[in-house]
Amino acid sequence: MRRWTCFALLACAAAVDAPAQTTPAKPMKLTLKDAEALALKNHPQVLAAQSEVGFANQQTVEERSAYFPLIAGDVTGSIANNAARIGAGALTDSRLFDRFGQGITLSQLITDMGRTPNLVAGSRLRASASEQDYQASRYSVLLNVNRAYFDTLHAQAVVRVAQKTVDARQLLFDQVNELAKNKLKSQLDVSFADVNVSAAKLLLLRAQDTLQQSYAELSRALGSDQVATYKLEDVELPPGPPSAADELVTQAIANRPELASLRYSRQAAYKFVAAERDLARPNVSLVGVAGYIPYISKLTSQPIPPEYAAAAVNVQIPIFNGQLFTARREAARYRALEADQNLRNEQERIARDVRVAWASAITAFQRIDVTAQFLREASLALDLAQGRYNLGLSSIVELTQAQLNLTQAEIENLAAKYDYQSQYSVLQYAIGMLR
Image (cartoon, rainbow, N blue to C red; front, side, top):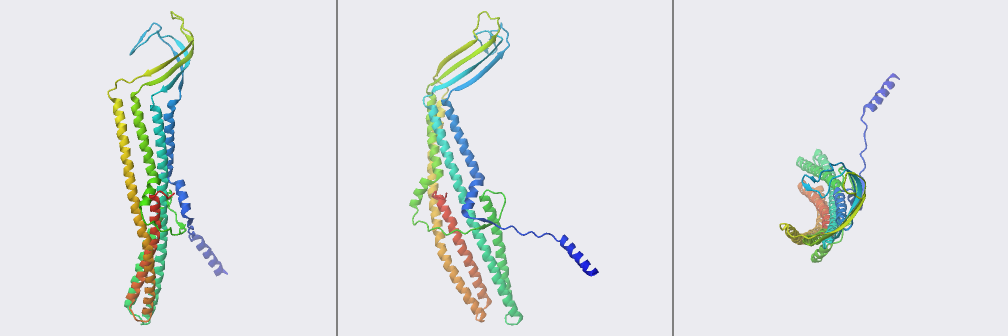
C-alpha cells in the first residue's frame, strides 16, 4: 500500500508540473467573396477614399454658400473721450461717445457675372472625381485580395505536394534500406534514396515558408494587422480569355474609374478657367444694417435717435491690379491643358495594361493544358520506372529522376492553374469589370 501511495503521489505531481498542452486553433474558413467583402469593409485605403468623398462634398457646400445672405449680429459697448474726433490711423466723421447698442448686418451677393456658378459647378465635378477615385480604390483592393487569395491557395497546394513527396521518398528510402540490410540492394541505392528524402524535406520547408508569407500578404490585403491562417475554398477556373484585345481596350476606356475621375477633373479645371476669367467683370452686392442703441452719452450737441437702419448696393468694377487676374486666368488655363494631357496619358497607360494583361492571361491559360499533359506523362514515367526498378532492370537514378519529374510536374500544374486565376483577375481589373 505504501508503494502504491507513493506512486500515486508522484503521478499527481508529474501531472501538475507538466505544461498544459494547448490544441492549435482551427484555421478560419474563408471564401473569395467573404474575403472581398471583409477587405472592402476594413481596408484603410477604402476608408480613406471614402473620407475624401465626404471632404469633396463639403467643398461643394462651401462654394454654394455664396448664393445665400450673410447675416451677423453685432453688440457694441464703448467708453470714449467725447471731445475726440480723430483716431490714429483713421479719420472719423463724428465724435466718439459712450454708448451701448446692438444690431444686425446683412450682406447678399447679387451677381458676380457667373463666377460663383462656375466655382460651384467645378466643385461638384471634383466631388464626382473623388467618387470615382473611391471606386478605383475599391477595385484596387479587390485586385490585391484576389491575388493574395490565389497565391495562398497555390502555397497551400504546394505544401500538400511537398508533404506527399516527403512521404513517398521516405517510403522508398525505408524499402531500399531494408533491402540493403538483406544484401539485396547496394549502399549506393540507400545514399541516393537518402539524398532524395533530404531534397524533399527542403522543398517542404520552402513551401511552408512561402505559405506563411502568403498568409501575411492575405491578411494585409484584408486590411488586418494580425496574421491569421485560413482554410480557403477553391474557386472554379474562369472561362478562357477573348481571342483579341481591341474590344477589351474599348471596354476599359469606358469602365475604368480612373479615367472617369480624370474626365471630371478636366471639366472642373475648365470651369475654374471660366471662374477666373469672371474675376475681371463687375461684382454687385447688397449690404444692409439695422439696430437699436438703448444708451448713448447725453453730452452730444445734437440728439441721436436710438434706432438705425440703412441699405446700400455696391458695384465693384476692377480697373487695374498689376495683371493679377490675367495671371490667375492663364495659370488656370495651363492647369486645364495639363488635365487634358493627364487624361490622354492615363488612356494610353490603361490600353497598354489591358493588352499586357490579355497576353499574360492567354499564356497562363495555355499553360494549363501543357502542364496537365506534363503531369500525365510524369505519372506514367514514374509507374514504369518503379516497375523497372522493382524488377532490377534499372538503377535507382532512373527512379529518383522520375520522382523528381513528377514533383516538378505537379508543382507546375498547380502554378499554371492558380496563375491563370490570378491573371484573369488582373485582366478583369484592367477592363474595369472586377467589382
